[in-house]
Image (cartoon, rainbow, N blue to C red; front, side):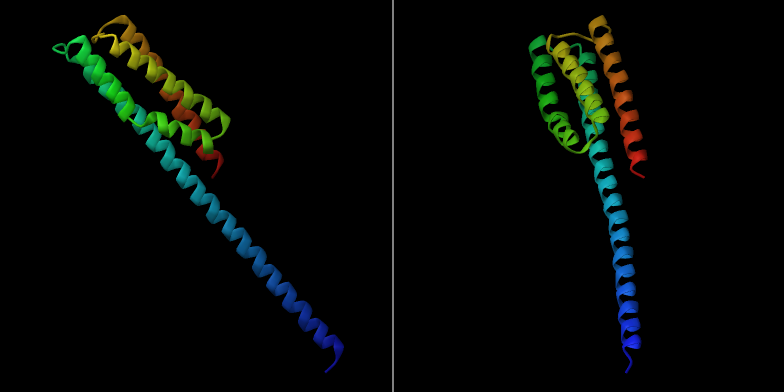
Length: 155
């Protein structure tokens, strides 16, 4: 057999294996990116749900006029602790870009503010509640927009 034939065959094998490896690597990157995006989307959804769930608990508490200040305060504290937003915010901080992390912190800040106001015994219609609830709503909208922007950027 001639050396030219052997060299050509070897070169063809190297090119074939190399192109297969490059294609496999590209496919792996696409799949990894899709998995990362889906994980992030699920985390973002869980965080938004925790914030909303806790806010809804607070809304329910300020509407219950038959509760004493102590009962309302205790229920608000439990709702805040059990809502899960605090813990999820740390997870968001690990995977999200700074723009999302800042908005996530701001939303939690306003949720904590709502908690403090409910623990003080406010009822629906109190101007402190209305202002805090509105600020939280604005922060939540800004957070959702930052999350959407981040998820769109990873497409």
